[in-house]
Length: 469
Image 1 (cartoon, rainbow, N blue to C red):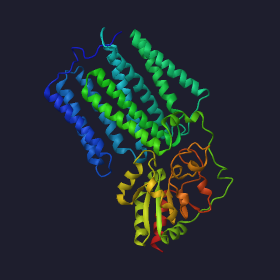
Image 2: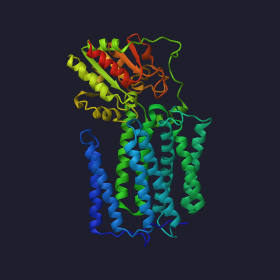
Image 3: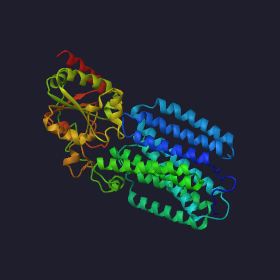
Image 4: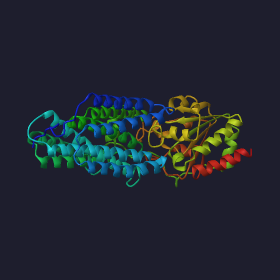
């Protein structure tokens, strides 16, 4: 079977107003991306992007001769009924999972559209269109199945640690080679069975690529798959002859690629190492377990005294802060300390939480002044002169193993150097390692004090104790 695109039936009705509307929608997308780069403009930027999407959909309904209109409207209604409640009810801590889910659905939808166009095509023409179709199917299927695995990892439906199958490297290489051969077979023969096998092989490849990724690397893979989805949408735009899809997909692909690169840099890793490092990594570092070594714990009153009489305190938030929804309590504590003349700042690691910007959004909810938020490089230079570093629910981003243990899976990842402060207070639920599964030696350091419990509850007790000083 040969592929033909833009058949007479589906050829878009080109007119000046359609092109103008598409241009306005594309500008909306670009403006939205720019606005999303700052917390102050992110909200209206989101609205501008949504307005552009609504405009684009409206133009399609007004300008195209659509078949099966009731089915299309029904699909949109069903998607709205599922998506709106899910987006409104999702907890802040589950946002990365939702992003992974939506990303996978986008990639899968693009692949399905490409397959449908392949099946309905007439004989004839355009190798370039067939190449775009094959590309869309392969990358869309990889993005879909890979995103589903990342969702399962973040939701802890499966282990968050890297999963390395016996002979996994060779299974992956073999599947990639098979996918390439099937892609060539589709290009040469145009046979439907070859296309079906190609889609199945790409789905398996997506699973095999993501399974060996674990810990704090999972959000980076989500960003990478998001870039894949953008490229898929751009390719499907070429298949369908839709300029706006090409523009929007290219924007998503480019921004996703840049974000992936920045996140990998923040982790001190290459994308290749993130994807394939598990095949060569040594086991988790650490010289013992919680049962074998002692730690120093304290009461909220002890921590209040330590904080209340300090000159400078740096608060390092992490995923535990998000889980406990303790951002308002930590803001109250910071205000109390400031009233006592203590200088308080927040040290924000680029990948703290589960996604970039996660901590910034949480602290913005509590109206923490932007001026108090300090990036990792800025705050690290001040930690040697800091009296107390208060770590709230973070582990991997302050783990000295990233700096000192070459055999550790997180070795090379830039961290916030809280171990250089005069005192360290760790708020933790238990002695369990962080998301990466790597034990933190800092917990056993004589300068470290542990305060066990839910972050919101223990911080509230510390707040009460500071008030009574």
